[in-house]
Image (cartoon, rainbow, N blue to C red; front, side, top):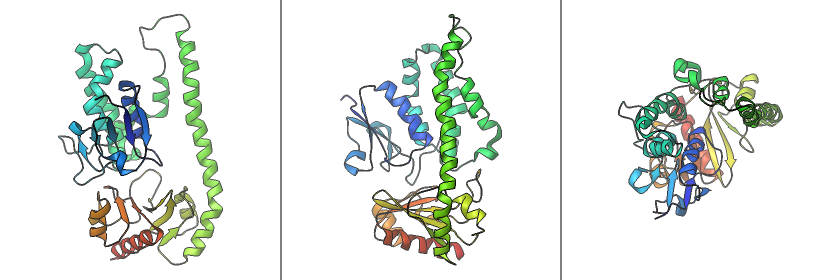
Length: 307
């Protein structure tokens, strides 16, 4: 059956599903991208490829999630993200679609896997952070990526460099302007977070009216007693950890180990909370159906963290 839909989750996006969509959109250009958490969409079907959502990995069934327990691992034990799973399944076809000579496919596929895909996988899973990764991320710095937009050595047409420069401008602009917007948003969030910290008092959980950048403000206010943050997220609620710094995955406290990678009924059973919906394998975010449920999960996480 023809692939008619490319299905991933709605809400905030990460590099792994965004890059997965790049691979799949080239191979299935007529397929519609559907961003949703509706289970009628995230269940396997012959007409769709599902990635970074769905709670399962089965290449034959065209579902490529990595959040479940047990999570899919490479032969060396390092974790896949959805990008790594999609690359392993479709990367060679993608290279053929990019007109890479067939005799070079395997070497180029493996080289990109080691130098580009693997770092994305590790970062997405919290298995490494950019500040500590050193050479692993040397080829993924912004200057290197922007300079990779220059023409390759054997493209010698007149004005090739000028065309490449013009093509690179909107990409560079989008990235830099995003930095400006995010920094400005941090300043806008400050007064909201100050009010929320005051409301939390000596409690260990910070409740915010929406998702927003909070770590820098919490740290600047000296609110070292806070361990977790809850906030509405569309139609559900999120429970997140507070990292100890910008360039680390270390948290002030992790969510309970027994919740890792569980969804729906399995997470409700493990947590004892009706309405518990999802906990990431990395134990830095959980989702609940209601405020009551997420507050109950936060209370449990605090009790476990404090022993």
